[in-house]
Length: 298
Image 1 (tube, rainbow, N blue to C red):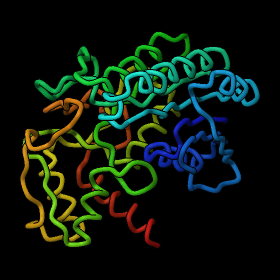
Image 2 (spheres, helix red, strand yellow):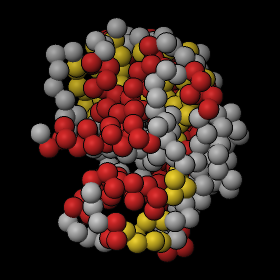
Image 3 (cartoon, one colour):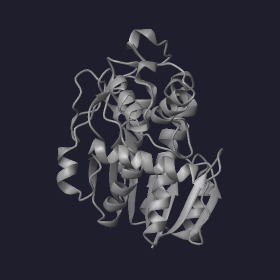
């Protein structure tokens, strides 16, 4: 079975690539600015920009991947707000390119989306609640969802929230906490912004099950609802750090360029009933985080 994973140098792309290789897939993995730190006989790594339709066309024609997992995105929320055109080109037009080619050459398309498609005014968003993004990043990810769901190929939308773990890609909140507290440096964490953080390896396991079973629809792969401050305390507990180094902050203390949802937490009861993988348990997620760290230092 041949699978194409775009954005495989990101943390979720990296973990998903490892999982599919473990399951015996032949994987074509794309990257652009950062390398993919995996070597495997069943892995082909290709440097490619999803905005380049002709290069994508050649890739699909030559390989005809049965499964496509699309994870490329400009994920820097403030950068998306500052540079609307770039965000649209990557997150929307790039996804349209992938969807068009998947229609012709593939059998199944999975798209990684985000809790930021919601405005955060109430929290506890279910899989089929109407989206209402408040920043340009969320708008472009919603545009990507629409491109995939309106395509003529079996498809799944997987929404995650504050993806965290050890591995390549942009620095996530858990890794930030770990690096700061390891040095004995103080940090501040928000007491009034809530998410449902997604552990990267558990996300990869859930995606693998969705792909294996060819499930279609919208799925929320998330953990428990926590403030950033509560999450920081749990990470400190896990690694035995001094919790007095963690101070409280509020959203008004942060001078973000783009607005952020106050409570974009996602409910996942519908998804949990469908999947066998336990992706939601905080205990399991933290154990997996510790395993990832031990792998990284060994």
